[in-house]
Image 1 (cartoon, rainbow, N blue to C red):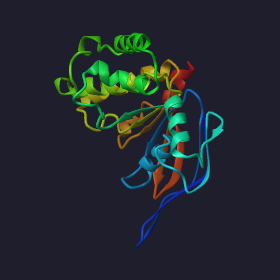
Image 2: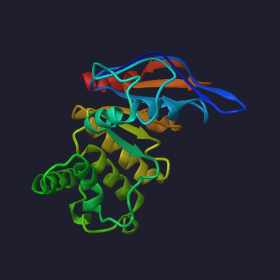
Image 3: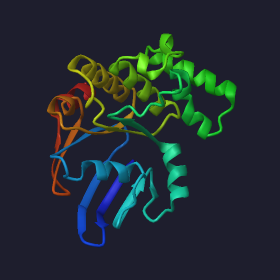
Image 4: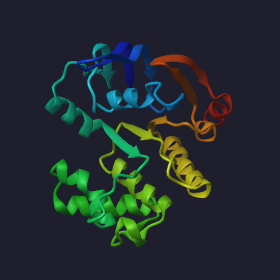
Amino acid sequence: MITIKDLNRVFVTEEVQTRALNNINLDIREGEFVSIMGPSGCGKSTLLNIIGLLDDITSGSYQLVGQEVSGMNEKQRSQIRKANIGFIFQNFNLIDELNVFDNIELPLIYNRIPAEERKKRVNEIAEKLNIVHRLQHHPQQLSGGQQQRVAVARALINNPKVILADEPTGNLDSTNGNEVMELLTSLHASGATILMVTHSPHDASFSQKIITMKDGEILTEKLNQKTVDVFQS
């Protein structure tokens, strides 16, 4: 699903050169739930942005679903991104001026899906995530947990091959945070491939594999045996 070899990302300004990622090697198989942990500034979000085709690499190889994407231009990356990746952000990134239905529908409009099909898909995903009764509400009328459910619905609406979650419970209390993690676990159980950046050992415990980063490098890559056993049983 995701294969990264000898990946480097260097940010250059007039005064300084900063190596954000250093010789990253990573394989994520279809259907895996992987967490990336590490201190602030270790390169977690940079790596997630590269995997999400929001940022380019300086050197190395990145293959997504068997296709080499390093060196693609922004238009090409955008097409691959829309076809394969769904994003869940810490700050939800919902549009306050749009109601829930319109927020969820937006990626379908970008992909030029006909109106009747858009309506069908939005109602189906809203039903699945138990937010049908909120479709005409606006984001500021919802709780944090409900807003994140809307964000998850929007991420799933195009049936992405990979879900990227950047601190998905970072702005939530423990109750709503657990609700979101249980939702991600349910999505994983149904076959979704999930890559999540988190500072929370509790959230990481829901995943199958935990990758620890420091100073732009991968320090460890360990299976969460308890979670693996659950999904293998």
